[in-house]
Amino acid sequence: MIKDQYLVDRLKQNDLKTLDKLYLTYKKEFFLFARKLNAQEKDVADIYQETIISLYENVQNGKLEKLTSTLKSYVFAIGKFKIYKHLGKTKKLYHEGQIIHISEEMQLFETEALEEQRQILRKSWKQLGSKCQQILELFYYKGMTLDEIQEVLQYASKDVLKSQKHRCMAQLRKLARERYEKA
Amino acid sequence: MKKHELIEKYFSNQLSDEEFGQLEQILEKDDQLRDELYNELEVKRAIVHEKHSTLKNRLQELDQNTKKKTRWIPYAAAIALLIGIGSILYAPGPDYQGLYADTFEVYPNVINLVTRGGAEPKNSETIAFELYDAGNYDEAVRAFDSLYKKHPKDYLLFYKGVGLLAQDRTEEGIQALQSYDWELDGSDFTTASNWYLGLAHLKQEQVVQAKLFLEKVAASESNLNTQAQELLKHLD
Image 1 (cartoon, helix red, strand yellow):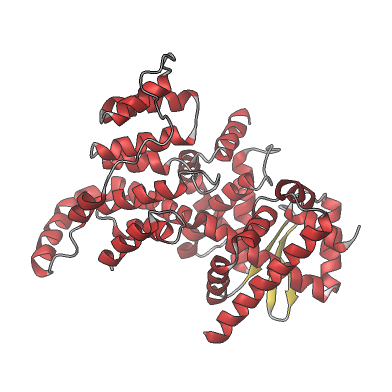
Image 2 (image 1 turned 180 degrees about the horizontal axis):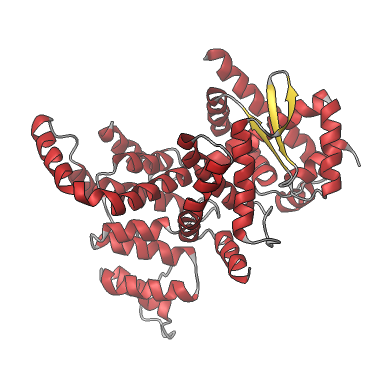
């Protein structure tokens, strides 16, 4: 556990060598685990890579700071959700053809979407002004609260920030819609 | 608690188990909130993708490298033969080595600007940069390396990487530059690192990886962007 926490701290410091090492350490066992859950062999490599990337993300956005289990069981819990998602065995929310997968164990929502739609959104994101990118990045990627962002970016009030964030989201959606209609 | 507060807490990872359950229940009934959350999750995903686009590649490469070690050795001779035949059959592609040689220049020392004739005692960082400035890359690399072990500052690693590349220790240079996640911390050396990683991969004739890094530089606001765009034109 102490060693595991040390590894998490290394990841927090952007040490990608540690990520490589973890990736190779759990790989074999993860494949066995996935086989037991009846995941399709050809998809496991991809699922495993996504699992390790999620681990890294969770460390970066502060979702994982202090381990309460071993690092291995944490990784396998993420992996299990991804495998279940792949097999369609998760709890879900539906909305006009949109699907949100739920993991209560990991307290996580994950969407399902078409790759082309995602590409459009990614391209639109690059077009978005840097001020908007910054706000959305701090909120969605760094996991900062609105209060924290208000302080860092020195907004006059939380409400001003809130409506700015709202405008940014609307703008992003507009950019994506324009691209979508062109496509 | 208001529903939007629950969403906010979700994204800042502050929900208790109970609140998570509460949010789930609200989402089941509230169409509009569900739609909003869906869009927010997709935006989050797009940002994550932007930040980690090289990670996936990195892990895939790791798979290939370990495979190569364990299984491919007996076939190496056969592959070499095929490559030999291939190079006879196909016209040569762009001259990667030439492009690299034309483009590579060491990064200027922007950290330790020594005022000549100053009476201040030199610290070990100053000495390392003096070695670097003097083109004594072998010793400079060793100095940056031991400094980095004591104080993991991003620029020490960066100059170590460039110092390795300058000595044609390309593989080691790539390893050094790839051992740190520049983008995540918004390091000042993010674009410069991408630039050198792009060049180094080019030298190794790993064109796919080279392009990945150079495209980032080309899209950046750094003054390296036109050079990267130029270089990419030669690779298409």
